[in-house]
Amino acid sequence: MFHRRDHGNSERRHARGEAWFGGGGRGFHRMRGGRGRVFDQGDLRFVILKLIADKPSHGYEIIKAIEEKVAGSYSPSPGVVYPTLTLLEEMGYAKVSETDGKKLYSITPEGAAMLAANEATVAALFARMAEINAAHGGGPAPQIVRAAQNLRMALRMRMARGPLSESQIDAIVAALDAAAVTVERT
Image (tube, rainbow, N blue to C red; front, top):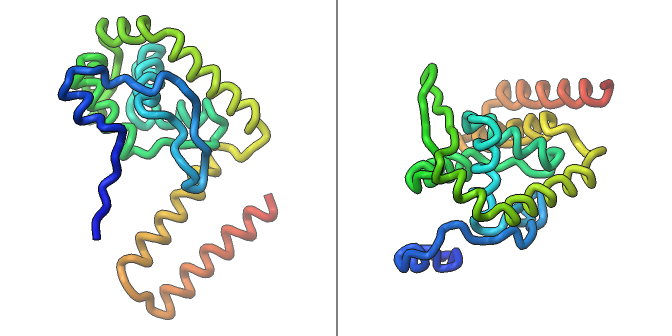
């Protein structure tokens, strides 16, 4: 059985010509561990647009910048960031140049106008991210959080490929135990 989520009737709103930039910085949802979204609908677009206005960036750099701004308590997935960048490009708010096979995103005059028109919302979003950063200042380093997520994903992907032989199980257990010992001694 398939379920379809209602995402605020965005398709209908778009069809009527209403702005895609919604959310208005009303706040953040809970963080980490699948406990909800960090940004309200449309907020991530403002955050990404502001980041590329400050410094043209690659998608990975944008993910890292957001992660740093909230002290590692949230890291947007590439599956959210790259489609948002594409949408910003399609809307005329961002432009792309390619160097060494990588896309570099920067803001357009239309994007700058959008940011200026929503200055209070953008300021509120970045102020809230600064609050989160201060609250999690003593929390885990973003690099450690990312590495732990990478390990979790690698394990899931390997387990999904099928049964493991005894030697494969032994190798994985040895690698995990070695990592645990290294972390404990650090």
